[in-house]
Length: 328
Length: 172
Ligand SMILES: Cc1cc2nc3c(=O)[nH]c(=O)nc-3n(C[C@H](O)[C@H](O)[C@H](O)COP(=O)(O)OP(=O)(O)OC[C@H]3O[C@@H](n4cnc5c(N)ncnc54)[C@H](O)[C@@H]3O)c2cc1C
Ligand code: SF4
Ligand code: FES
Ligand code: FES
Image 1 (cartoon, rainbow over the protein chains, first blue to last red):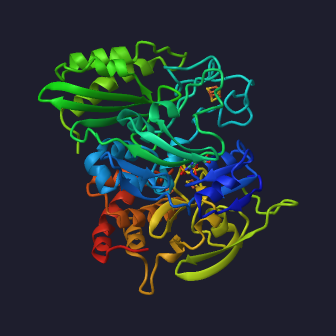
Image 2: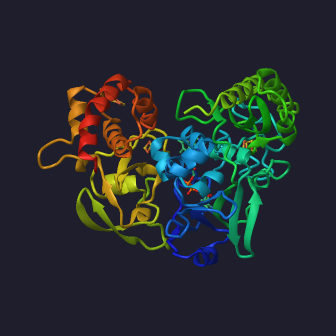
């Protein structure tokens, strides 16, 4: 690690005043320190945000929940309100990383974790995300883990988070604060597709702090499922994951939410596919149509064509599990 | 991240206070020293192991305020004010910690390299009190890899120790 100075502000304004191009915020440190040890990031200044007052989970006036950016991943998954009203969030978190890492990782940090593309992680290889304009060796190289949706010539990386897939499905909002003031960003607009600027993972400004994630009132608690498929049973990133949530009126679908992980540069949601389910009976034929629609624009790379069929079946299975009642 | 040497013109060291294995310690650390390197290199507490140094193996697991974490992915300075327990701090005046004793009884190791991390992780798991079935135990120990594959005995040891620890209300 390249030496840096360390700061531990107690107030948000103080943290924002310290922020700049050569500085980084650190929360759990589980992604940032990893990248610094790999010699991929060399901040001159670390701003430890752990003493900022962002650790609460509070009800919103609309009936949702506001989750402070520093609420830990394990703490969030085990919060009784999350378990009861937003089991999709709890399940997605518990499907990710390890118990030790979940004890360290924060809500804000989870949103901002970088891709696990092997070339991004190897300082010896070119990578457009790391070094703009240097090329993308994954496109014609090892790309089994890479994107089947929304990729560009410049980058085919995927976003590795599980929590974000659930937050995308539920339609959460990200609260931020920066030198220009406070913003609320819809989850769908928070992360970006790579296009020709793959170094930008999201729409957060360099000096902006994530302060909270807001969950809307509807948590689909009775009928949701998070299905994660990976190379081993635990402690591995998703090849494909599905967050599925249904609002049922008897056997009829009143509303549906589906988000995919491991397939694109951001959690993948397609409102048309969800609308296709409205008014239909909750049955495999309908689920298969939604899956078809979601994957219509999928384009495989040499090493990951299997992901399309895997995703198709995962969507049908996750929707089926959700329809049968949230697995406890 | 082996360099603990301050580079020329490097930022100053930080003073931190830890309750380390029950003892109050005032320490001086470089900001980039991980908790793992502080324990092993600066304090000679080599029970905590460095396997991958990237959060992937669990060999470096310690307890911070009773919760298990990977000490390789945390800066020492970030733990200022915390209560840190390593494998060296588990045993009490009356002998081995029940989890350590269970690992011995069940021969839950081969080379032993992963063992301190496994034991600290298992104590953290007991404190969390979230694993009730065998499958849940396995899942919740998935952050600790054992290259020797001693998993069956590790699992048996943890299953054996858990009731005792629950009885004690668990604290480390
Ligand atoms: C071995 C391993 C396996 C993993 N497996 C999974 C998995 O299966 N699924 C999964 O979802 N995740 C997985 N993870 C990733 C883990 O979930 C993330 O590393 C973690 O969530 C990041 O949170 P943190 O608080 O530690 O972030 P940090 O490392 O502290 O920060 C990450 C980034 O976010 C920035 N940041 C942090 N907080 C804020 C804020 N409030 N405002 C603005 N910027 C901020 C930092 O500057 C940094 O750039 C794994 C990690 C490891 C090491
Ligand atoms: S896929 Fe993206 S992150 Fe991976 S090598 Fe290509 S540009 Fe870099
Ligand atoms: S040494 Fe920390 S997890 Fe491997
Ligand atoms: S006993 Fe050798 S690695 Fe576990």
